[in-house]
Image 1 (tube, one colour):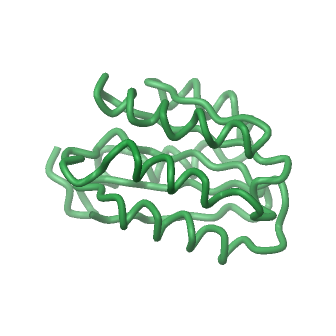
Image 2 (cartoon, rainbow, N blue to C red):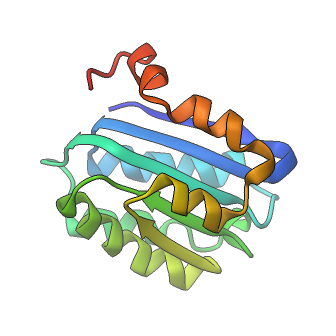
Length: 147
């Protein structure tokens, strides 16, 4: 399962693209990599685009909670916000489990069905066009995802 992170340094904003299959170990590794890559940086805002996850057969509630707890103690979550954008009710439920723990660690963490609403909540208007270019269906097709 691919996970791609795009950091917009001037906005202290990370766009995370998660698509295909997501497993417990991949999610944990992602969180640990985020903690390492943004060590020493506070107030990181992140939107995780999970609209194209299509297999969570190896993702469990315990795995989600463990991964969310890995955020604790990382500088990036101090004054940080996180948004998870999903396309299905099943993924929404899993994302809510993660967000419930993460919102106790970050300033706030929410789940959205609408990318537009998530980006508005994140207040990233200056880079809106750049973000839209990364999350367009064409961009995902370029990454090899069949929509």
